[in-house]
Length: 120
Image (cartoon, rainbow, N blue to C red; front, side, top):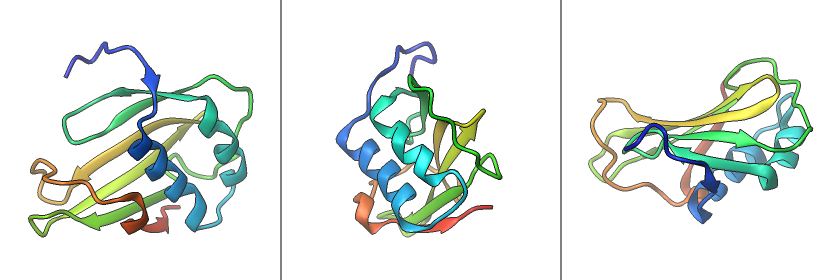
């Protein structure tokens, strides 16, 4: 994947994952991050679905940790996939995706199938 890929609108699935992460567990800065969703663009980082995020709004979230929320789900091969939302300087900066065994993701779950938890 080209690391210099330009930013593009979120896909429906990416948006669904981010909204799922922001709607399940209350945490400091959550409402501000929700307000950023419509102003976020993405660029692919890796083949597993990690994306860099760029926010074009002035709303800042006072989160207490770089990764305030995360989720997990089981891949088709039985391994756990993790989804971590990174926040830098009050804005979403990355959706990190990885598996416990570092293998490639076989099939992403639907956003509603993610088990969401506070990371901080």
